[in-house]
Length: 481
Image (tube, rainbow, N blue to C red):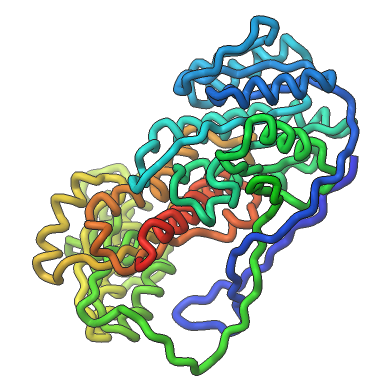
């Protein structure tokens, strides 16, 4: 089998300033010719049941080509009834254990060569989170199945063609023109782009097919993608028979060009993750340019006096030593966890306080709320006082995020939950706290890890791709936003 081309992306990290050499690119669709067809030996194929006739159409197409087909029924989907001659496996739960048990059952039929996830199509009007629970279970299922398919697919891929495909039915444009479908299936391309880098022996592809395409047409397109010889294309969209992919088109930035903005000194931004790190840098620049107002949300508290032992001390080693001595003086055992926790609290408070003061120095008003973006009730309870001081919220900046970088083989349920929820559920919680019709700006911190894929960041890539699709969804529904 051929080796996949290297996919190296180089980045420059800049803090507290603008770097002219950082490129800017706009994402757009690019035409693709019909895929070339490569023949390979029939093999065991696992297909998830999407609850529609597409499951049967794809299964029959594969079976007619000589493949042995097994259907995986899902507990949170109304599975499509199949003829009795098709072998089926039932997934018991959308987690690591459920996926492991399903693959163990599959092993009784032989060595797997093809995995095709058919994601159900979920219609949506304007409620971004309408199908959150069900689609999160679907994404977590694919995430967990990928973990347990990694070894068998890669081992077989050393001597024959093996394939990992995901099929979404968003809009046939990879979410760019979506106004009527749920966005969460956008996360599928995130995981595919990451495992494509991690798995050198497996053909990986994410396909988005217009839900209006006929079942027979969609099944033909899936079969064609399964047999494509091009290893460089990772995601493909079908609008009717028009085949496209996403590219990042470089834009030339013009210096010293005046930009018009709706942001004024009365604008009030609700910002997650905004008191530390890169989000704080962006807020600080906005304060300098616009003198607008901010309500910053963060998990760390700054509502305490810095302990006497820490005052004037900047070295982390010295802070740890003094924290240890403080714990001993209180009769407590200075375990590494307790020492690090004490130091982290001091460091976080300092960074928050410095950010708040720097924002105020530019003439902006700012309120900081120590609250987890995942705690919707606490946000709703704490926001009114800040709104009373600053005015009604007019914009959202969602910068909160977490990492749990590991190869897919080593990922856990808790990794997925921690990384995915803060991005995706966090956004839904922020939107639930405002009147979307009053919003003038919404900025979502996605990542190049979502667009290009990155080693060890399957969960992070999935979440960020959903944010990207969410931005298109909101823009298509609210053109003036």
